[in-house]
Image (cartoon, rainbow, N blue to C red):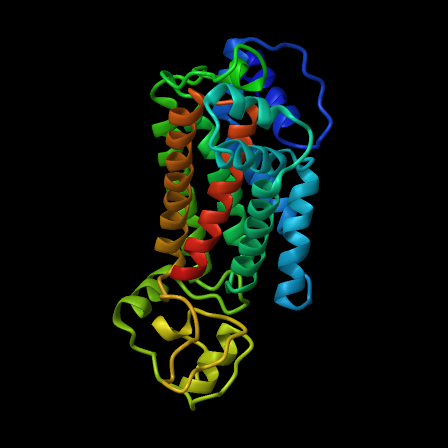
Length: 322
């Protein structure tokens, strides 16, 4: 238990701004820290998502949430993303690219990447009906990418630094077990979203799933008609406050001329949250593969870039599917 707490302290101290006293650092502690990284992501997402619960315009809430997340992580992951973009974008050999990444300044590739990723994250959050759940999922996906990046046979690109300290430190089975636990957890969270726990119109999970599968209460409202929430939408098209279909999955949206919601595939959160998490993880693993080929392994900057890539990809996937 003491070693587990050492790993948790190391994870908190490395991945967040929260003050902790790290008493021990070795390979075993590093492996435990990277295995527990998704737990830190859960806490970060829960705190950073608070602005999304304010009675404010969605775009403002999304911008505040993304900004708060950057503060809670000291901006280290964003810095890593910018450095990796400069290193890979330079087209230089591995040793020169690593030298570029180690510099304190940010080049044009880094600036463009930062702007694009932050814009995508804010836009995706602002366009989802349940941004809080989406952000928590994205933060966990980002830290889950660290667990996979630190598995055996993934070397460090440098003999020193954070990458060398954590490379290959996670046990082989840990990424699979943690991923399975995360998928089950967010399937449960999605079920609570589908059951109306988050919109003030609770339903039983069975009726929520049945409503989506059958589309029993899905009716097209008048073109151009707006609605401000799931309950209002349902009342406008059915005259009741129970049941829902594919067209009732968005919030604060406008019905198009065809009578459908203007964004999203309408998948229930039960499916959308786990699928979005997997999409974010796969995007990060694709970047990891690229970094390994170009740089020879991972560095602290690569790890930070993986976090931001998985976070952004998860938010985009959920915005498309939700």
